[in-house]
Image (tube, rainbow, N blue to C red; front, side):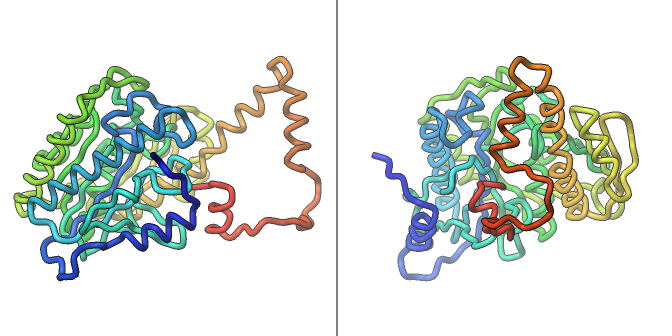
Length: 356
């Protein structure tokens, strides 16, 4: 029977469970496990990745088993300490991974302020990174394929980036290799192309961006565990991902699926218009490039809302709905602070309103 716990309750629970291993020192390599959710073995419908939908509980259960299968294999292969971090964000106030099933010698990354799982967790204390439940890059036929947001693509120095590549490039800043990835068959081809020594487990077959065919649970668990053990035993043979295309100074082309997004992106300092769906930004090194990509992904997001806002009056009942919504959120022509003004410091605001 599943128990629902509050935000602060799960933080306390994780703190109690983390590193609940036997008392002796844990020797062996330290491994970071990052997970997303679109590449979970048993998730075959996009809605199942979102908290509050009927399929989410089963998807969360499958994610937890995918992660734990990897941990079992890593430990068999000689791993010492394992750190798990959430790279998805389904809207669940608790982690998408069920922390009540945290294995011995594994801990869950907990922070009191927002952080970026791709760049803020990995450091030189880690020996390897594992990425579970990942997805293919945008504009490819993978299940829920996208790159960061649904409206963005990123070409870095001629390389079409997916999020597994973001994980690999970020870890490579510290000489840390990406040793295992799981996801659908389309992502498997992409991982083989950019990092052929990284172990990969295809947990399902993508029939389209909105449907996949899952493999049997016992087979997936076995294969993830086996691949993780193999990756661990051959850790020193898997190099950190440092392609020459993203070393030094290089051009990034950020693409968007609507011209309105690109029109906003063109305002970014140093951005050059490539065409009506793309801008180019020159950067030095992966981190600067990633921060520019992330900033533009966030900055351009409101364009879709604006388009909906403009189109809504033409829909039957749309004008009245807009007026009702404006009244509901208290739009008023004043710059004076509201009497019940919310605390807008980032952590408080995101925690209260669910903004990630």
